[in-house]
Length: 83
Image (cartoon, rainbow, N blue to C red):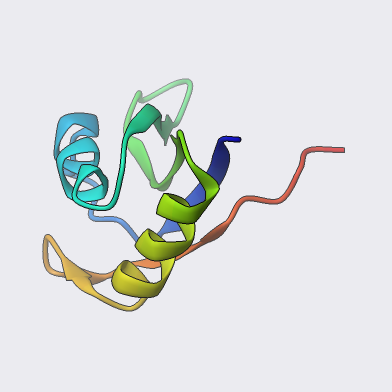
């Protein structure tokens, strides 16, 4: 079963391909979605990543939460459901 992750405190210059490469080290990545401002199309500094296996997602959280990536200490945890 897939699991969706929230990745915060991203550098505004990070690309989806870079995140996919980083998270692919821990398992298969289904989707990467960097959230952007609708008017300026600039990154808001966070993204959602869906990983194929829940175990891979848990491994990525353990390995990457608090790790420096592109000059910033990223936050990685389980994404909360939209209600």
